[in-house]
Image (cartoon, rainbow, N blue to C red; front, side):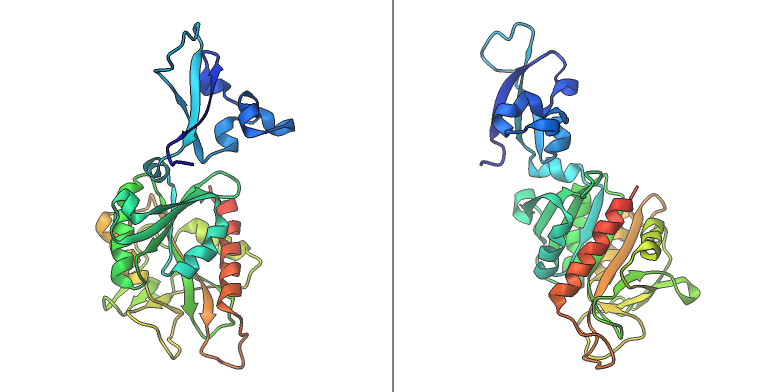
Length: 299
């Protein structure tokens, strides 16, 4: 189906906004039973109901209503939650978090440093989410992808980075960035600076979810730098957090109004025989499970 193609057409009453249900579209959707009475845009959030002004027939006071897929820009303009990753593999695994996922390439929306944005809804249909994958991994691609995405998602207030980390912990353990001694949250080797509890970070709702989760979860400062590591650091280590935070800082997004955070999963523990070893794929599935739990609780 074409991205903007009209799905089907029907004649409604003069209250199309309040009266459009699946029952009205039953012939086209095949809906039945209790589903038939749900509001159309709630049951099919990936589409948009539109009024056709040029229908070419006498409607006798009734309005012609059509339905089409939402455009890429419409999806982005409704985003409330941005989650960025570092790799294609992470993006593919995190796709499981989204209901009604739809991919938008960076070229489609003139975001040259973005490989793709996967838009969708949380499982409970309460939150519009954008999963952002840069063109390649690293601090600079992350920085550019986040800055450009923020321009397309002006209403986003939940801003998160996620992905695999290296740490002397069991593979599959969840890591949530949290303040440590001296309010340190991120030890940044890339910019040679220390991020100490900027406004909105770490977000309170994310920290609360980390306490409630049944998955093994560690709240700790993290470290970030320019390359993969082969030995343990003082804190769990990942490769893009500096670019993520710099993009938020320069965009003016580090403020109390926003909820900001990092959630990772241990995918590398340097082959320590005293620690649990698991595949990266299995670890990222646990990460997606944590995100589903968090988004279900998110206000």
